[in-house]
Length: 336
Image (cartoon, rainbow, N blue to C red; front, side):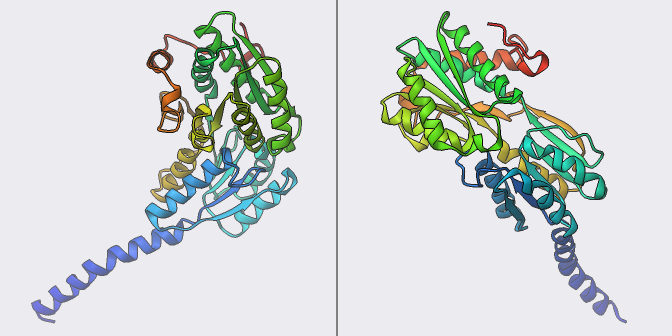
């Protein structure tokens, strides 16, 4: 073989090998996501997860499988089916699926699982949790400053410590901004159905409005769509959560407490693709960019400079440790 032939072979390999390497990477990463109840277009938690998965697909060209739970009893089988197919990583959305994942994960020790919104202590599970109370503290401040009646409200979904932590942060932020403001609290129910009942959300918000609330935060997933609809119809202000819901009723949604589930899903897939995925707990708050409040063209006219400045100061104080927002889940209390 002469030198010219050798160089020709090298040139061919130089072009072919990178394509081969990328093809192997794509073949090795076969992601899947199991959404919580409520559907991937719930305008809230699940939809944010869907957007993160879509971003990964668009940026890498790697497709993923997905499953939408109609009820919580489907969770264990859905996770197990994806694991049996060889899907890896598998991202599981919502605390309701923790028990199912705790059963399935040990059966597939070589599969990487990520659960969003709960901790599952297994060597092949990454648990992503959020410090939501930091975000609800900020929107509580904004709600109190926007209120003209001196009464604000919050409608939660399922009555669990996680939601109580968020309502507590909301109340503490409101009281910090406006001493003596009244905060009404309602929970939709005690089962998973509480996340997908817009009619019930509308009823609870209507009751709060009747009691004087002129700003109402929804912390209820799909149920919260009814909350935001009623507040808009009544000429009051709603506050969204999980995803940025400002655009659902422009001019009637004061802001949204954004929980970047999309980032959690994208980063779980991307870390697996780069072989940099790690088990254990990831806690995301204001400092990590996992939580924030939304300001955009849809609510710009509702947020005064004084409100924006107050929220920005508090945000920095939380990040720097000057404000420690009480965590209800630490002791089951909300000191006011």
